[in-house]
Length: 265
Ligand code: MLZ
Image (cartoon, rainbow, N blue to C red):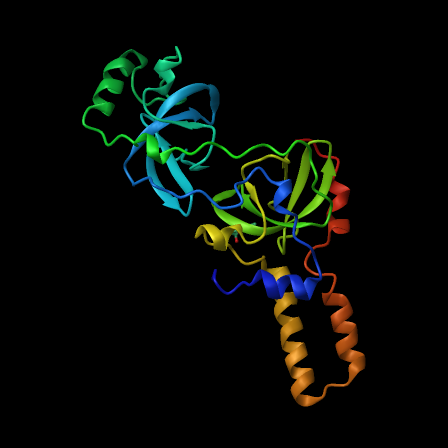
């Protein structure tokens, strides 16, 4: 499925503009991923942000890690960039006067946590310091504009990064709308979210990029077929011009999503 989508062609067809790199809290050159599956590190518990827990790398894609908190089940995995500020080497928490905590939903008796922790770390493969990369600087202000294109993590399917459009801007928030999905996956996030990327980030970083949804893709393909058909068979201009004026608005335009623009973060 992925690999068939080309931003170049898509942007030419839709006559849309990518959001510039300077909008994003992302390194212009995606960080190298030096982790290995099975390595352990410290991570903030996404469901309980004041807790630092032990996490294991259970998967990866480009510079993104799929993490599972030790002592939790396998239904609460989460993804972080290798240069996320939420990740630290084992020992970091204690060095800074903290205590490692059991994850929310620790499956055993809380009183067994200290011995569980000790056993977990014994003989474990510990992620070396060289795996950790400082997070990129935060752009001073929100410079996104409605209608600019980007790549964004689908929060309902967080392993996926998909073509998206800024549907609205409100102070430090932007509304991420997914091309071709009629709003089902759209969300508000901060402009400095680590889940949004400049156009081309997927191919630069080795992370697959999903194609736009059916609606966008159908229009995109129809446009291509109409063009080649009219070129080869000399279809007259009235039908092809009405098609191209309709498709030039596709996929889902910012104006069609703005009525939902008042929902909060
Ligand atoms: N299989 C899922 C994936 C949807 C992904 C959308 N991303 C914006 C579905 O078809 O619902």
